[in-house]
Length: 219
Image (cartoon, rainbow, N blue to C red; front, side, top):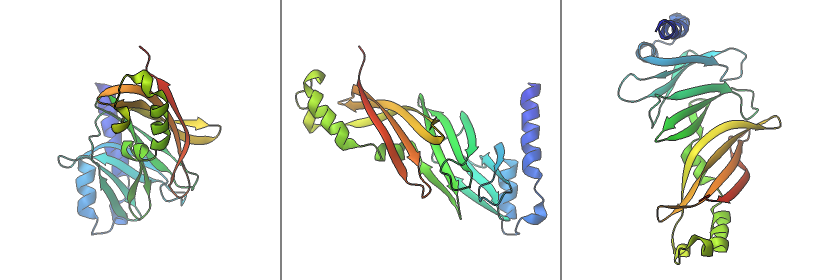
């Protein structure tokens, strides 16, 4: 109980350490609202100037937001998901000399990963949807066609496969940060095989598919 109380005090102190005189008058109401409803606070060098900026996860209404005190202004982004069970890492994951926000959240029995970069706004550069969009479906289709007899589905080639991700986490290939995802490919609500994909993000925030492996479901 004392540890939780101490963490809350630290969060409030950290976000209030920034002098209000450095915040534009236009941004002050938003600053006050987000500060008073902050549930998580940290800092990072999001613009690469060698100075840290304060970042919060905040819930001023029924929605969650990422907010950053940035160049005497407030940048914020409404999240399209809850942010209760979360883990945050601040790290430059694409070697552009600006730190990024890696947010892992437990949702629907899956550990999902979201990555945000900061420019003139907060941009989403990785999410479960983006990962799925960058999976090579042609390779999946070829695998299904080759292995279709073992799945016991006579009309499998007429079905559109769906992908469910179980978890995504940041790891390394040598010195390069990558994101490893594992999940399953489903047809007719049946898990026909498991997949493992490795993605990286380049300096232009493009997704680079490093590897995609498919495995039979163990009975």
